Image (cartoon, rainbow, N blue to C red; front, side, top):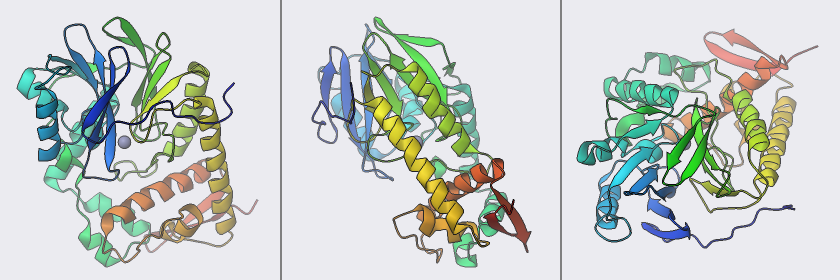
Amino acid sequence: MYDSISYPFEPPAKNSYREIAPGIYWIRLEIPIVHDHINVWALDDGDGWALVDTGVHCEQTLTTWQALMKAPPFNRPITKIIATHMHPDHVGLAGWFNKQFGTPLHMSRIEYLTCRVLIQNTREQRLDDVRTMFYMAGWTEIGLNNLKDTFGHFIHDLPENFHDLVDGESITVGEYHWKIINVGGHTPDHSCLYCAELKMMISGDQILPLIAPNIPVIPMQPTANPMQEWLASIDKIGALVAEDTLVLPAHDDCFYGVHVRLEALRQRQAKAVQRLLDHLSEPRRVIDTFPALFRRPIDLSGAQPTPLKMATGEAMAQLNYLLGRGMIQRELIDGVAYYQRASH
Ligand SMILES: [Zn+2]
């Protein structure tokens, strides 16, 4: 039925909104980090609005929310915040809504607790283990010295309590039940919300129409295998979600063709693995694998640590995946890791 991706709606302008079904609003917020916008969703909750994701904690986004909430349709209470995951553009203002209006936060337990720890790490700038991981990946002294932990900078302190989004359960918003599908890969326990009655899935960053989500290894767990988890998530979502579902992603536009998109992502990953394996015919450090994995050029000097950090985390996810499958081996030489295709 669906053999390609299609986009049924024009997106709203930045810091504006449109209704895509009765009581379901698409709000597009401008953000100062990574992507230039995030889509958040306002769902009619009877007495007011449930918000799925919030935008980052910064003056501009606060000003936008304050303006939106002055006029219909958003001049009604915010009944709950549902955070798909712990990244600043998603959960950034959950604590602000909670503090201002007492709005409860709904978020998976692993996402909530991990987020609190990472915010604390930002405060304390605990960088020893972070530097060890990036040294092992082949970074120069300049990059290591420029490292800063900025994760918590765009997140308001979280509320001190929360409501768990449990995989397989549902959360009721207004007259609709949204099934919670928790999946790993992008973050440890990202929640997607699926309403079979509305034929809609809010996919957060897990499934995006134009770009593959960032699947990173982070210094808190350098031996994690998030790529394996993300591939499992593709199978899980594919098995649960009907073909004619409208996907509401956090970046770019709402689309039909979820199964087509899942298959394209699966194939894209299979090709990346093959390029990487070919590249590892001789020993390489993490940073040496970038040409096999990324089209964009990555500055290895360390002058811009943030894009280098992201590329390193993504490359490590690919390498840990291959290590987990026994397809490559790793050798440490003076604290730097070298990866090579397994000889058998
Ligand atoms: Zn994210």
